[in-house]
Amino acid sequence: PSLTTRLVSGSHPRPIILDTSLRTTTSKKIFSRKEGNLPIIVCSDEKKNKDFDRRKETLEAAGATIIRCKESEDGQIDIHSMLELLRPFVKSIMIEGGASIIRSFIKTAAQKKKGRCVVDQVIITIAPLFVGGLNPCAGEASLLKPEFPRFSKIRYTCVGSDIMLCGSFR
Image (spheres, rainbow, N blue to C red):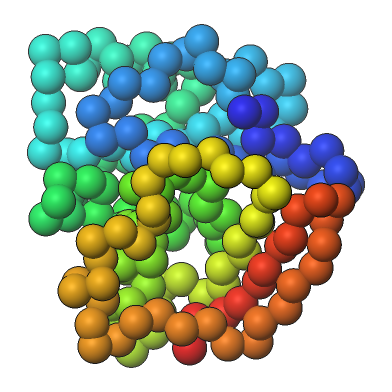
C-alpha cells in the first residue's frame, strides 16, 4: 500500500511497520515516495539472525528509522513498549493490520497502564465482502477477562458500500 493522503488535503502519514525479524525490503512502495515521511520500522531487540545487521544498514540507508523493541510473551512486538519508544516521533497512530496486529492492540487496550487505556478510539470498516482469514479476537477471551474492552460514544456512517463504525474504549 502507498499509505498516502489522497481524499483530503494534508500531509502524508508516517508509516510504522511492525516487523519482528526485520524482513522488510527497500522494494516496498513506501521507500519510493516523492513526498512525506519515510517509514519507522519497529523490530524485536531479542531476535538477531545473521542478516540482521546488513538488513538494518540497508533499510537505514534507504531512509527508514529502525527502533528495536522488547517482545511480548507471545513473541510479538510489545505494544506498550513500542508506544513509549514512538512517543518522540508521533502524536497519534492509525493501525491498519491483519488479525495478529489488531489482536495485540485489543489485548493492550484491555490492560490499562498508569490508569489510562493506550488505545483511545477504534474505527472499524466493514466491507460487504467475505475474505476469510483469522478472527482478530479468537482465543483472547480468557486473556481479556474480567475486563472485555467495550465501546462508548459509538458512531457509524456509510462510506460507499462500506460501513465505518467508530467508538472509544471505556
